[in-house]
Length: 79
Image (cartoon, rainbow, N blue to C red; front, side):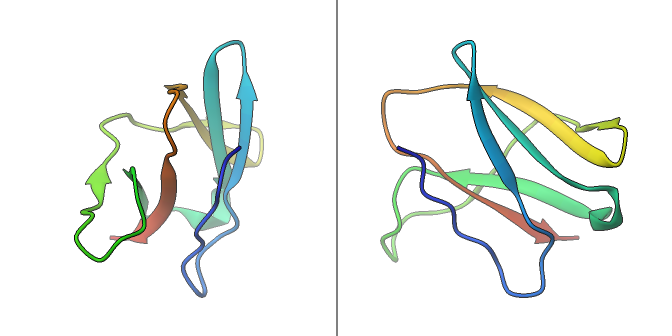
């Protein structure tokens, strides 16, 4: 199960699980955003920058991260 937290006014983040990986993508109109992740939603949980550079595929930015057995929460942060 994947939970999604979307910041207001941010581009929609599409999350798909494929071949043991999680593919994340968003529209190219969402340039200037940085993907972040954390493992819980508590106030003490800190967002960490995903250290991968997204690639443009058609009209979307996309990247893949390894799937984990624990919950992951993603967001796009405007730079």
